[in-house]
Every structure is written in structure tokens, then in C-alpha cells.
Image 1 (cartoon, rainbow, N blue to C red):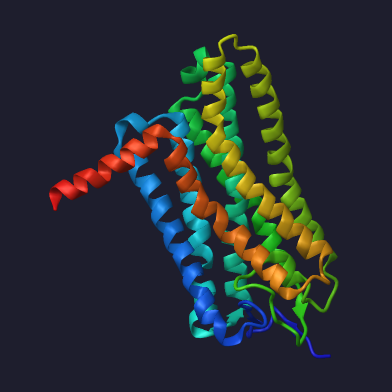
Image 2 (tube, rainbow, N blue to C red):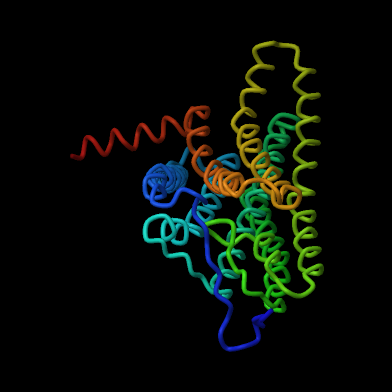
Length: 316
């Protein structure tokens, strides 16, 4: 069996996959997928715009929300060209170097979103458990340091992950399971020993989402204990209500992410369409739903968006 080493001048070419077994019907499937991309791009851009524009939204909670929207925008853009290229133009070829770049941003931004969700959980913890010290703990400088720490952590984790891919050789079968490059999907196609890459991938998950998720759970245990000590039912309900949007964002991020990882590692005998649908859910659901959830559940964001559209109407 011939193999291609990545040290040669010609990097291996992989073939991306749309939805297996649908053939010409992929064009019709691409319409709702394209619509989801439009919603994700528009919704997250709108959140970023109103947070930057409205002075009353220049608070820690909304700064973290803008980080979440920026991350979701990056995630959406990182796979936009390959996904629509596969569905619209049947443009399936991608070389290893382009694949590595896409994986760096895709997985790096995924880990970044996990870090931002942890920062948002910390924000809710301080707001509910130590409200008198909220302004002194979450200063603008501290928020910037948290954002920088999340970025540095994820870049430091992703660099060895993608560099190890350059050491692998790939055999004749180079058909990927998705319309974008996914780390586990790529290393399973290597001819030589991929255990180091696999272990590094697992380590990257553990050091990011594997730490972030339990910390978020612990923060909410402490929040619930604090809220239950509030005597007034109205105040208790108000405190819980401020967490609903974040709990929803955590759920729609971690459930698809964990499900996709389990399907890839332990569900190899599952039908290919299951892999594809899980991959698209993981990719599009958080960027699509996060702006909708925060627009519906957060009064200040909803008012800012309505104000912006009313001002646009008045100018027409």
C-alpha cells in the first residue's frame, strides 16, 4: 500500500464529504444549512454590534457575551467555505496544509468557547454570591486578562496538536467523514502509528473542556446554594432567571460536543449519516441558538436590538 509522507513538496489531498447517500439531493439540503449559516453570522454580528455601540451594555456580563459571539462568528466562518463548497459545487478536495489551518481554528475556537463559558459562569457566581464586590473583582483589566488567558491557553494547546499531524503519513483512502476537517477524523486515516497524535488530542480536550465543564458545574452548585439561602421568593426567582441564558448556552455547547466525540471514538459502526448529522449539529447549533437565547432572555440586549432597528427605520 502506497503512503504519502507530509515532508514531501506535495501535501496529501483529502476528500470532504457532504451527506452520504443523498447524491443530487445535497443541493436541497444545502438550503437550510446555508440559512443556518446566515442566521449565525447575522445574530452574532448583531450581538457584537449592540454591545460595542450601547454604553449601558459596557458591563462584565455583556463583555463576556461579546466574547462568546466573537467566538461563534469565528467558528462559523472557519467552516463556511468548505461546507458550502461541498454542498453547492461538489468541491471536495482539500490539502493537508489547508486542513491543518482549518483544524487549528475550528478546535481552537471550540476550546475558546468552552473557556468563555467558564468565564461567564464565574461572572454569574460573583454577581450572585458576592454582589457587593462584583465591580471590584470584575474590572475591565481583569476581564481583558481573562480573555487573554483563554486565547493563550488554546493557542498553546493547539500548536502541538496540529504540528504532530505533519509527522503522519496517509494511505490511499483519504475520504473524511465531514464537510470540514476534524482532528479524530484525520488521524484515523494515517498509515503509521497515530497514538501520539491521538493522546495529544485527548490531552487537549482534557486540559480545556475537561477542566472547564466540571468548574462550571461546581460554580452552579455554589450559585444554587447561595440562591436557596435568599429568603424572598421573588429575589430567588430573579437570581435564577439571570442564569437561564448561560445554562442554555452551556447545554447546547457541551451536549453536541460530547456526543460527537463519543460517536467518533466508540461509534465507528454507526451509519455515516449519523456522523454527518452529529457533526453539523455540533458545528451550527451553538452559533445559531446563542444569539437567539440571549436576545429573548436578556432584556437589555433585546431592547438594544429593537432600538437599533427602530433607528434604522426612522432613517429610511
